[in-house]
Length: 314
Image 1 (cartoon, rainbow, N blue to C red):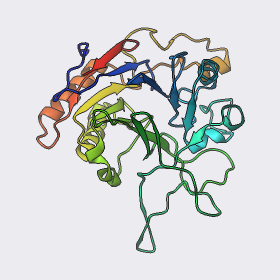
Image 2: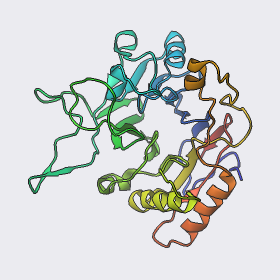
Image 3: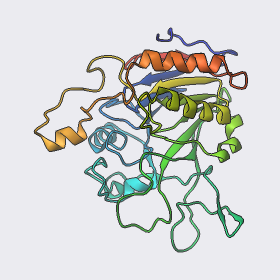
Image 4: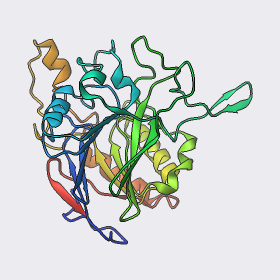
């Protein structure tokens, strides 16, 4: 099932990228000695230069892990707007807001869903503050790495707290570009649905870090529904490579599965209720591969990798 190490691309990269999936929605990416962690949860706990947080849920915006990374010398924390507000949602981090302690950088989405108002297209970002134009950037660069913010509609349509943000607050996905290789990785967080404006950046996406089983379905067998949604993503984005995440492929590693059901905090915040949200990941991944093979318009290659193991992409 799992990809071999190294993962060979076609064409090959001029310089290798090192990638680790730490379970849940956590990814560690090393580009030219710069280490980026996306949604660090329990791991990694050291050696990270930049951390990217997609949204306020505790398994993505995990304050204890972020604090450990900060103590270890984290250079910059980059977050979406919801992480700056207390939230009443049961699965939000209990230690929001993070602004005072971490002094994070906030990005607005350069790519976002447009809406129609009075029959005319509205190009004002939905996360615009209520007064005055926003000065929040959409991109940030460090060394050979460029990070661009992308709206990624997630599990919750709105943040559950009083705030000055207009409109829905979704995940913030990140386009991570290695300018040495002209190679871009899209980390999606907990995205649920694609949207047509993804075509605006489709040509920029080479590899997608994709959460399995996130499409919502009440079907007796949700797999067919999930695959249809997956194919909508792939048809819009046309990535060369997809690496699945946010599922459990073995036991308790690297995200612990056991928890004390009588301890409310542990039940809610140690993520013991178990990834994946999909069962039988082999069946899911093979079905996705078969569907891609049967769809001439999609040429994406799927590389499942083993959690907790560093892979070299070359």
